[in-house]
Length: 231
Image 1 (cartoon, one colour):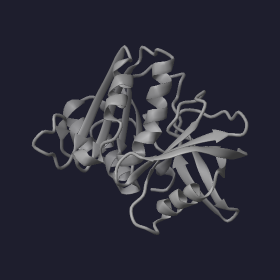
Image 2 (cartoon, rainbow, N blue to C red):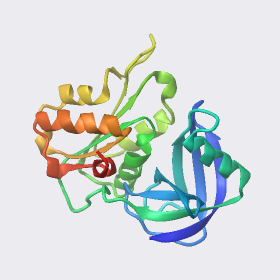
Image 3 (cartoon, rainbow, N blue to C red):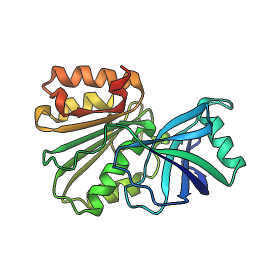
Image 4 (cartoon, rainbow, N blue to C red):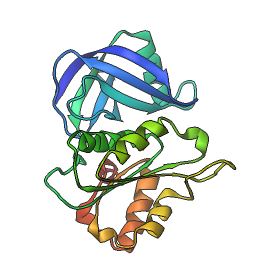
């Protein structure tokens, strides 16, 4: 694992509560799609965030959901705003994309868990992969969506890519699917055993998805999430 100083390239608001951060590392760093980094606030305070950019990208992208003025992630946002350089440690995690597998892929994320699977589908698009890649992104309401057109374009550029944004509480003009995202998946895909499944979101969500997917035939050895180490 490397400790790396990074120049803060930009910080922008994607929604009222989600920030996009671009960092320029001081040296080349290798990682695998689906890994995460520690944002170093101090030697005794290191905070994990998924890497949203694909391996080989010039900048390291983070998507940080921050609710509340003094919340755990908002403290990181304020630190980034106050400093032109920051320190990270990477790569971390064991739920990275298994590139040797040729099985169909199911990538499922809730909220800013999108950053975890974004690294994967962007890498696959860069490689012009022919694997089946089915992406589900669950959100509470349409206002929580961000960069929807960008994600749609990248996933649709795959030979066998499908993108399904799902909201729990739709507005009248919502054109996508509605409901709890993993329940929508279970309705759409009857044979989960065929898939390599990658999950990201709140720990309680990931735990519920694992339980329900296994009950519908998913194979535990083909399910991946860093949250599994904690739940």
